[in-house]
Image 1 (tube, rainbow over the protein chains, first blue to last red):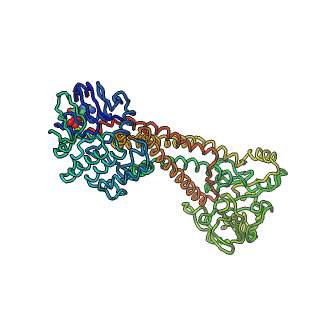
Image 2 (image 1 turned 120 degrees about the horizontal axis):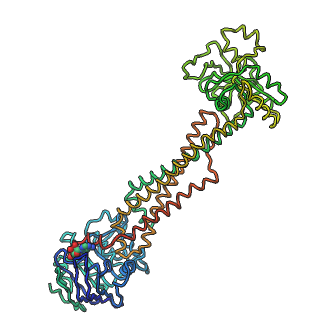
Image 3 (image 1 turned 90 degrees about the vertical axis):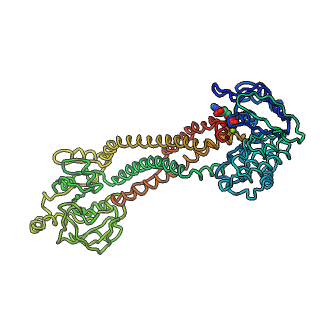
Amino acid sequence: MNRRILVKEAVVRFGPQTVLDISRLAIGQSVRLAVMGESGSGKTTLLNILSGLENVSSGEVWWGDMRLDSLNAFQRDRFRGRNAGLVLQDFYLYPGLCVLDNVLLPTRLGAAAEGENLEERARALLDQLGLQRPRQSVDSLSRGEKQRVAIARALLNSPGVLLADEPTASLDAQNSAEVAELLVALARERGSTLICVTHDKALAARMDFCLELSKGTPVEAVFETSAGTDAEC
Amino acid sequence: MLKLILADFKRTWAANLLLLTLIALATGFSVFVHLEERALRLGSARAAEAFDLLIGAMGSDTQLVLSTVYLQSAPLALLDRKHFDDVEKHPLTEWAAPVALGDSWFDSPLVGTTPTLLTRNGTRALAQGRMFANTQEAVIGARVKLKIGDQFVPLHGQAGQFDAHVHESVRYIVVGVLPPEDNAWSRAIFVPIEAVWETHHLGDAEHVRDEDDGDEHAPISAIVVKPKSIAGAYQLRDLYRQGQTLAVFPAEVLTKMYATLGDVRTILGKISLAAEALAILILIAGAVIHLRFHARQIAALRAFGACAHTIFILIWLELSLLSMLGMVFGVSFGFLGAFFVSHEISAQQGFPLPVVFEREDWKLLLFLPVASIALLLPASLGYRYSVARYMRDSGA
Ligand SMILES: Nc1ncnc2c1ncn2[C@@H]1O[C@H](COP(=O)(O)OP(=O)(O)O)[C@@H](O)[C@H]1O
Ligand SMILES: [Mg+2]
């Protein structure tokens, strides 16, 4: 499936306030894009409309030839479950469950087809992320470990697009660097598009491109095929 | 999925326990009221089965039944012995026996009577020993804590009564034990009615000896009559409903009493229904709080693509499981409670109160589907949590 993302003439308003105004934004397959900008500039909102968590007030959001903004909320949930991996600043792990069950949970609850040897894939992924004890309760993990579990969960079904909202913001420097490294490496390994909202210069530097949002300025940008070039920000 | 439910239960165990307890209490209360009321009704009816017709002095028929059938101590107007002689000779009577109440030994009422009553006019034998043969001998009910050969001194009146006193010079020896019976009489001690008369005329012993058989004014509390036929029973009853006497069928009086209790039953029924309704309301309120608590998790699950319907079913299952568990506990506690209370009452009254479930009790189970349907409402709230709202709060 063509995983090129295209946003056309899209506006997001909350009440009278226009939070996001995109005349045209294209993100090619396997591109690594950093989204930066000051607080309140609409970074999370952008990520939400790309993943279908929120819908645009007007305009179009395309994933390949699927028009996301024409789906209802349940359909968008389903679409996201199958095609996108989400990594959020606050992990959102399910308390009381072990590491492995957390990784499996969305898939088990119908996010995606379970596919072959699901559990084995999860264990392999956890191993790759340096998590040795899949049966440990997530409640007893450090923040760095929690974010690794969240990354494993996002990558379990090798989604075409990985969306991360400030994945390193709540981690210490050491963990930030490691998580950034893993995120980029694993996305590259799978050929996934990676869109990463971040204030973290080091993380942004690992991306191909950088989109700088600022309040009130319409977005017009095209990021096509990565050639492994460094981001220019 | 089961793991998820277990994890939720474990994490919010205190709240769940509270919810569980409330449901169990409400259900338990209903079940208890229901079962105990039935036990009382069945037990008291069975205890009265042995008594066909009772004749007493003019007064309250309820009092007559309570005093004679259930041996509740209460002053009863007395009859003259001549009434007994009349009934006994009546052609419609198969047999009749006088009963003199009032004395006791610890928890056991002392009943003065004739062997006729104890052997049902010779139709049943004692379980042990023999019939009393003189005024120093006694036969005991199966539940009395004495054995053959034991001697005891009775109390005038009932222990604890203000004018109760020991009959110093009277001493009985136990010579026989009655077969077990499902009524209050199994905890009574029986002595010849002459012995009771004698005791109460002690200062006047000669008077008793002289006119032993002839005192037509010797007092008796009641007469137990076995009529020859049902028709005869009604005739006798009508006959002794005139003048200074009162004749009743205990079963009839009980029916009247239940009718009065009927109102109480209705009220209790309504209370227990209200308790169930309250339990369901508590459950819903609990569910809404439970969901508020889990809202972030639910929103997140949806953000990660979990199917909204699956989540809905999960929440519903979780809540239904909780109410089912509460109900199981409630029914068990209600049953055990009724069982123990019945046991206590049996020990006191001498007749068993059967705690039984009957076919109509399936209605109690209606609680479960009603609760489950009611729980669809809070469960559907899960659909309404805006995923983005929680996601944004986590961002900078
Ligand atoms: N659901 C909403 N209702 C009202 N205002 C919102 C809502 N979502 C976002 N906003 C506003 O939109 C602006 C951009 O928010 P956000 O995308 O979270 O910014 P960033 O992630 O860049 O900090 C903020 O001013 C925020 O208050
Ligand atoms: Mg944000």
